[in-house]
Image (cartoon, rainbow over all chains, first blue to last red; front, side):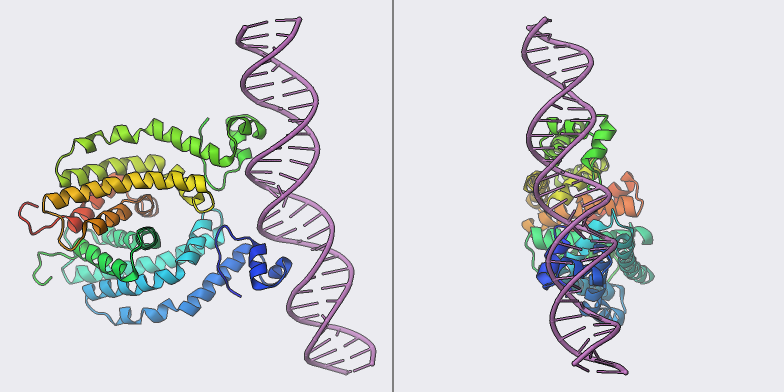
Length: 181
Length: 181
DNA sequence: CTTTTACTTGACAGTCTGTCAAGCAGGAAG
DNA sequence: CTTCCTGCTTGACAGACTGTCAAGTAAAAG
């Protein structure tokens, strides 16, 4: 009952797709917004990002963290980007979706900060970056929108995306001059 | 008469802001879409990106091209991002705005390709990147959405954005091992 | 003075969200 | 078997928005 959603999909379309009347949708969800938030929560549960982050939690070194993060996230995005975009697009005019979006972004920012802090602790964070700026830039780089540009508009495969993003992030944030790669 | 526009602004709002009746707007613009495209063209003319690209055209080396591009573009984005976003957001449901957007993106992609090709010709393109992939990644990196993340959501100043983006792009695409930085 | 131009008000169709009322079919409970 | 509750149905309607049409007005242009 949780189906595709996009800004160009009306409640009638959803009802028709689901096989019930438009009004019956309102018996289950108070509004379009609530339907969307419920769908987001449902997809979160089904796709289980937290489950997928297990290898990330197992990683110890900064470079491992970085690579695992890009791997996990790069495999996760293709499955959620449509819904994530719907959430993102309504965020400007809707407080509830905005806070759902911001909450997920805050989680991602924390992960980015943790990666950068680990690199810093190991002394291999590239010297031109402050910890805060590096984390923010890392967060921007792995955004869903960047993935869409590369994967959808440029046609990159998931593996090409992951490989290239790892190269970009390592050459940017990992100090090449400090001994081992 | 060309004012702010966003998905949450109705034709009535615009008419009110401009001081004429809603219907009179339709005497000048056939539709909301046309009003938007006219505004985009007008802003293009007023802000004169092509004028601003003069120093870019004067640049010769790949690194100069890269740095000038980031400088020009980083100063340009803050003045156009609102309207650019309105264009971007309606692109999914509107063929005319989609092609206006795609045209501008194609220009930007050509610039990116030219930068990468120049670096490649000079033999300092980082060896892990093909010319095509590098140009596409560069294009994704300097996207308006990335600027918004950093400048608006993270609060970076224009100069911080330009400085950091130059660092990121140079450490990514310029081969550090080939003699002069 | 007449025509044209630029605008006005008012009305209306069509799309969408969200709400309300009345009705219907089937299962559970007495 | 009858009663009630649940989940759904159709139909109607308010309110917001886009786009269109008609008729009228005021002032500049000829």
